[in-house]
Image (cartoon, rainbow, N blue to C red):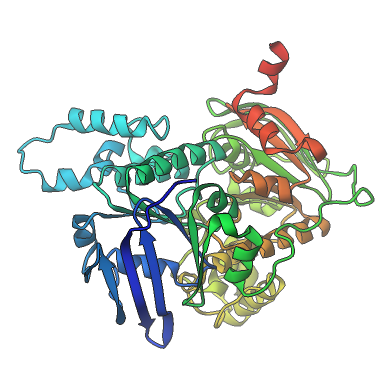
Length: 509
């Protein structure tokens, strides 16, 4: 834990902001001390992002005051915020995909330079120095070639180049593995010791309680309370966030009486030329199977390979004991094997389309009349039925998905999978970027689906989530399964050991 100063660097008093009839912030006050790591917690829609966007100059408050170093300021643009020493790492990745990592990191420099020719070697060298602290990323690589997690590290690297006094981090570890998150927090604590003040937005209680000094809770656009982390508990923070007590984030696991030897999915010696090799596993009826591993280990690639979303794979896949020979993802959907992307906004949903249209998107013929024309009544009925089963909260079924909270967007993505009556669902980071209440609901939904006979495979970088929701966890390292954990053996230490060292090396030593 950091020893922060009592000196206030940023103070906000009675800030309010409305979007038409919706009041996003209601007389919110907030104080940030020099050199502290201050968590900002709240459910999706609580007002966290609106408050940070006002601090960063993206939005303007309707009323209230903001003080920086004791002087009242009105920040009118992100450029002005940067000039005042405020840096913001957004949850949503905003990189230019067709230029290099180095060019993205130093975009501000390259756009303002008056030199006739850009010193590409120079910026690549400087980028490499920054990236060395975060991970193994080639500064000359095009951003579009990076995974989501690697792109998140590039966003963080951009912020580290700024001469910040205040650094805002919005869910920076959502796409990172436990190891990468620990590296990031080493950097964050070092910055705090240098006097930089950190506002840390997160739904992850473990991160807040291991790394932050204080936590402020917002709910429904209102300030609820600020607490010293050392003097409170995760349960108290969650209760303040949701206005009620959440008894358990995870539902009960499969009981001994529920365990079945019936195999839903069997994979034998699945390989892809460069990304994974000789992968074999079984998914049994009623269980939730987890895939763990470091970034780049091949977890997502294995799932996408089984569903024929990418890569040329060899090996054998059986569904309910029958060979599954697929040429493309369309055939995978028809067979009842579907994949929910980790990037729900990029690959999983059509944000500007309606909830109903998104739910039916995997198989539009089910809501079509005369084969080609969408029957809007059938489409709406499907969306409403599946939405009700997932406790989806929305205004009307025809509203765009972009209007929903992160948790409800994820429920729409799950409803889209359920619309084709799947037999197996691969869920890649199913609760990334959603609040604690929505997480608990999604975990319950997954357990209900498993009990109903749907095969569930969860890929997650959150080890507590894998341990809490899965019955067994397979650990992937360098494209191979290095071990399996279950029961009392399912611990963070054991999973990380298998992910970073591997069973083969342990047995050989």
